[in-house]
Image 1 (cartoon, helix red, strand yellow):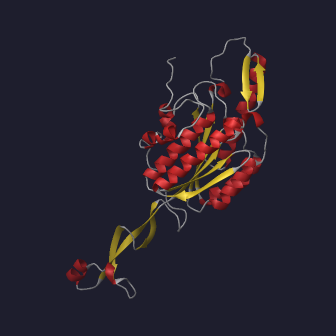
Image 2 (tube, one colour):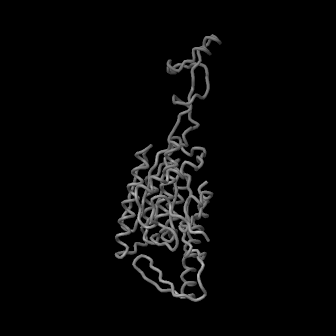
Image 3 (tube, one colour):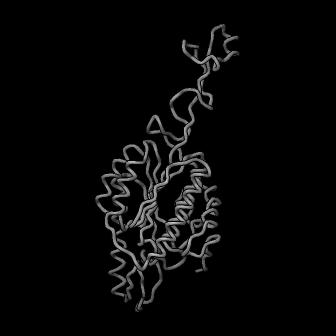
Length: 309
């Protein structure tokens, strides 16, 4: 198999602003996600509520109280009766990204750490949102902290996302040897997301799935009632069982601050745990009627663009 080149400016482990800024090139190839607004105060650019806005909708008879500035003088002159213009309100839709940067994602066997692939994906989705005129926000979750980024438009939205991802990723890398388990941190992140997500928002969940538990289902169910939602599962060839290995081997594996040496039997048992964790996450998303797309950290996003469409 031909060697796969690293993404532009990337080394596969550390994150830089340059490589996250470069994600805009891929984002330009993504289609716009359109859906009917779920709430009167948030929508997908063009709402069904008519009022004074930027996009012309129709002409109707003038009624008492209408703004005289909206009178259509041509139709009025032609019909002999006063008519006024109506416009479709244009609304920016809030896009929220729940990005899991738990220590379990700081793992890679081929091309990139899973955390780096997750960061590339989050930034690509962020650029896409900005290009399509939406407001972009995020909740970046680690074991020790949650970074909340309120939805903002244009450059403010994407630059705060890039800065937040770069900062937390660097911090997590520096604390690998001091890793401390926090089983409820993603449950708490889901609860927080439920409080900050406005009805009509589009929410993207990006994770390796290993830190989601059954308790996360309740807050995510509440969110799904009023928001659109999609999920991405970030995997690795070694955690998928797709990496070619000899029949007999001694394989050093490092997860967080744990170092393991796996033989064939040990790897098979370890792999089963990884696959079970991924299956649990996809089953949770199925219960929510949320599509889960799988992305491999052993390949570039550019080669997996079909999963982003």
